[in-house]
Image 1 (spheres, rainbow, N blue to C red):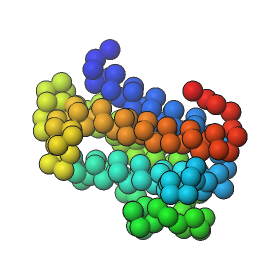
Image 2: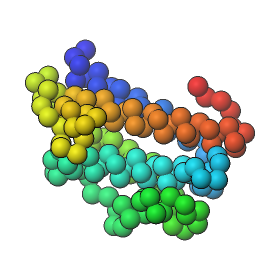
Image 3: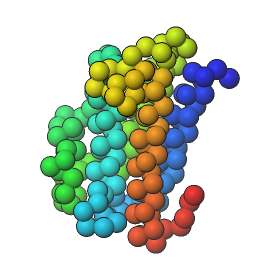
Length: 163
């Protein structure tokens, strides 16, 4: 297995960890906050989608799948405090959109060469992901951090412990 194949495999498995975490969540469960000021799962999913699609677009605008109209506006710092279910897509739509974005990320990673991993990442990321290789590894780390937050929501809801 090459490092590129390993990176693609980690990205795919990482998405599976998130979808497994949310498999038994209802649409209503996505709006539960573990504590009053924490983000609910619906907002976190939208944030992950918006972040990953936006980053792909910075690498190459042709790489990023188009998000639904108005999607990015639903997932800003200002909307993080909204609890109205009508303001957020349903679970199935969020998971489908995230899967589509992650598939685009995996497809891009599979086109990389070892030399590409050493190229500079977009300027916006260079302070914490100086190369494309660092950026690729940051993507599953970001999602995993949110999975940890979703695990806390699972506990609040009394769902079975998964990991």
